Length: 116
Image (cartoon, rainbow, N blue to C red):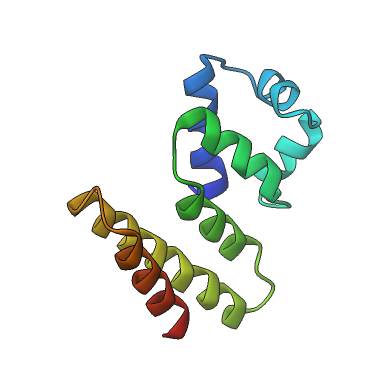
């Protein structure tokens, strides 16, 4: 199952809804849009991903790069988005190990992510 559908299903579970129609309505999109996601013809836009993450408590930094990787038009673009997803996961792990890093440590970590 692709990331778009995993996040959508978690969103529906968080809201305790079963039908895609209800999910579409709550995201202010059409049922056809979700059908496109289900059939791999399209993927959620950033706004929909952000809304689903907000409701589920999932980190946007994890899901947005994964979904953008799915929508990438070239293997090179896909690799870039997947690399960003890996960096976001590493950052989340680092923060989880040290839940209260100093502002300086966060700044240095973020700078390292983008210098690689």
